[in-house]
Length: 251
Image 1: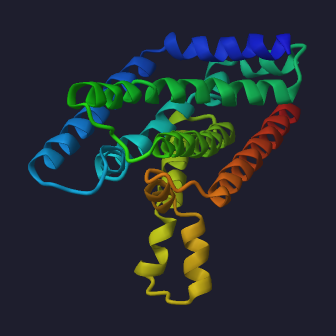
Image 2: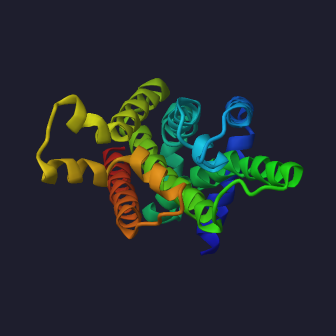
């Protein structure tokens, strides 16, 4: 455990030694703040039954920085090791492969949590200033941020796998962005392809991130998306471990 924590500390610190972390933080917080301000302004002018949490987590102003954040924070995880020539040093160090892979995954995941933590301040400020709850029930808070963690874990694992597959950061970012975007819009395929079979529509609804966010932001916490995201995160991390070991043997 001590070795794993040492590696994890190295990964987290490496983010803040790089200027890209601060650029991502700045633009992410700027877009999130603008999204929150825009939704409050719209709701202030037009009465609606939608809560501020539902309004904040559904528009394109939320999904755009959400999707874009993953390739930016994961593209250098393994690609940087290849570029700097430290991959061989890492693979010959007295550490286990799974410790390296998990430390990199959780290092990125912790930074992802840091990205989202300030949004809680926005909702707390809204409640303090207006004296009104930003949600109809506390479960909507718990549900929304639980889903953010679950989706974040899955998409971070996808980004880590993309970074492990290539030595070029741009290629890693492109693979990650394309994959996450496709996964995000899977729920729209039945409508685009005009598929009306109930079983097929239910299947795509099961993997629809946007539908999941709509449900969880209302406080409707379904165990099926939880199982889906956790299992897919484990699968992607396992595949990353296999790619890492393949590159280690090849080196």
